Image 1 (cartoon, rainbow, N blue to C red):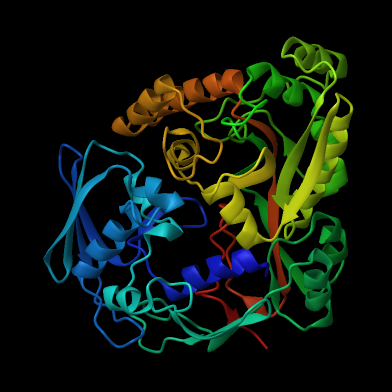
Image 2 (image 1 turned 90 degrees about the horizontal axis):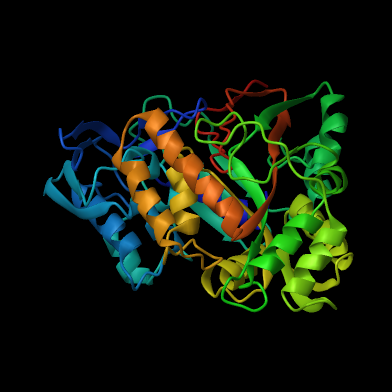
Length: 460
């Protein structure tokens, strides 16, 4: 694992959410046993499965109230608070019943509840420890045992888990390996049984190994160049347009992803229901880009910084290719590759960057990507974008339930973003997991972040 995804795995296996995402991207109930939605779409009444936290205390509806109120509280300053932006209030009417009232109908609400931000946590653990950075007490199928920084995380089976026949494994040891080639080598040698984020260049090697099975496909993710719109010169549209014109997506995919990826200039894959469909992407135009920079007052170019992920090899390589491409139009970008913890702090919390090569994934409903990244003032809006027309369309997009109507709204937003260019989309990625052939029962979920071995067993 990489260090950031190790955190995702802890969340996925130690905690529960009210809902979950299935491999076919449908949304199902998890901790919620049932849900009743009022006719006006404003009130959701959940009945909870009987469940117990790993510290032995029964999970009750009040824990849902605490968890959700904590997520949206201003003092928490959670970038993912947007996941519950539609929630007006949450209350426990008894120990097993949660009533959530929305401020407007939200067609994406059950999907948003499946996000890892919406885990249910025990209030006393947070109060005793201040936060969850050093402890992990959930109600999920595995219990936390040990964490050695930059080395491994150990989990053990929760024998009292409420869901039948889950988990099937006695425990998990999550080894943290930030270098791509070390993960592949560990799987081939048998040091580990399973790896995620298989490096593109290693796919042919693993496909040729009869002892290894690959699982994966195109996923719900987008990789992009994001601009800090509060900083000069990226507050100037012509500068952003120049960057967009200088980018050679095919070269990025070939050099950084060994040719495995789909170029895009918009938000979603062509076959996604809310996407713009097949589009012809304009080829790079270096002279046109230089002319735009001159129009913006930067005929000699300028110096800047390009921040990126050190721990994701393909993203680091993408940033390197982008850096070289921008030199052609006089933009000299100093590369600043950060570990995942620093990247999250610098780009997504402090917003202390000029440009960044980064990405987003995990969305099932288009609102998950669009609202979090582009609604004015949202914690995930790392580019500081603000457009009242887009804000209004975002509200409309969740207020209607007909998918065709919603698709038209999100397509309109995508067209506006192609004009405003708060970021330059680069490619839709493919993601694979690889495992020894005795690992059974694994199902790939094409969100990019929901990697679960809850129902996996070993046939040895």
